[in-house]
Image (cartoon, rainbow, N blue to C red; front, side):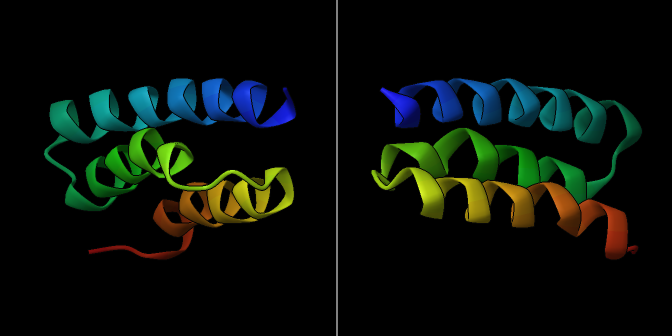
Length: 65
């Protein structure tokens, strides 16, 4: 049940990253947004999902092009 909630949360954040990346023509947030939308389908462990989701959310903050 926890993985479903984490998946919904990361999917919503990923959608926001995708919209931001598309409107600003910024490739890093767009790619991370797509990653946040897709990775919950392949990860079933809640702890790993939180770690991967947090890493994907942090990448646009620290990587600038």
